[in-house]
Image (tube, rainbow, N blue to C red; front, side, top):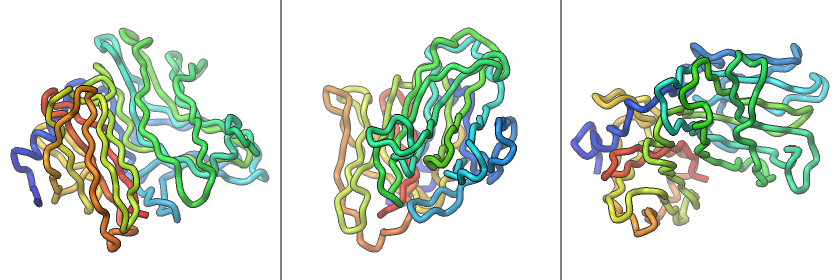
Amino acid sequence: MKLMLSLATAVLLAGSASSQILTEDFNSGVVPPTGWTYSSTNPLEQGWIPGIIDPSADHTGWAWHEDEYSSNGTSNSHLISPVMNLSSSLGTSMSFDGDTVFATYLANHPSSVGDGVSNVEVTTNGGANWTVVWTDTSTLSSYPTPESYSPCIDLSAWDGMTNVQVAFHFYGTYAQEWWVDNVVVESGGCGGSGSLHYAISGLVGGGTATLTVTNATAGGGVLLAYSLTGAGPTNTPFGPVDMSVPITQLPVLTANAAGTAAVSTGVPNRATGFTIYSQGADLTSTALTNSLALVVL
């Protein structure tokens, strides 16, 4: 069923935009985007740049740190957010979409062959000191398939503070490749519902994909929708969403007693190579899930 901005889509887009403190989708094609800054200890490194269409996935509209080469020395760079005022924020959290390739070059990989580190870090003094709040622990080593994730990071330790910034910190001598997208910092937990999370597995042409939302309202409705035409943002009376119209709505799911709603669906062979932009919502709380942009393999 194709939707423009019908009532059902309006519910999907409503979310809890008032709780959002920072959003960035890197769709401007400029890295760092407006308000963000870049810092590196190595003037030779290329550093954080706009994503490109990669053999593994369509990363246009992402921020990207390539593996670079040892001749450039060790990469050590921060992609730093604007300053945020969390003086009235409670339960502050951060979510983002990430992809990692060449995970064996991460220093913490079980079979590591490199010194790479990918961290999310927080500062309250303009970068003089950093606190690590998340570290990439990807283990998928094959190329060109990336390991994808959408973590929910607890930033409540900085509730009530001003001059707060988050950063993506890349370190490595000839290391991993890292893409990040759809950064959201908000009060009240990721998605405004305390870690409402959406994931798709098995997205392979001719196969069966499973769409799963966790931490939804037990017994409540969960709405999922997708677009094939782009990541938006689509402006609505309720704020932007990471899908472009037309948006296709799936039948409403019912979350079980544990707050999990899932559906399996066949993926046509002809869909291989297309990028699916998808997002969901808990219809009881009207909270949005994280958004996804995945290539059909």
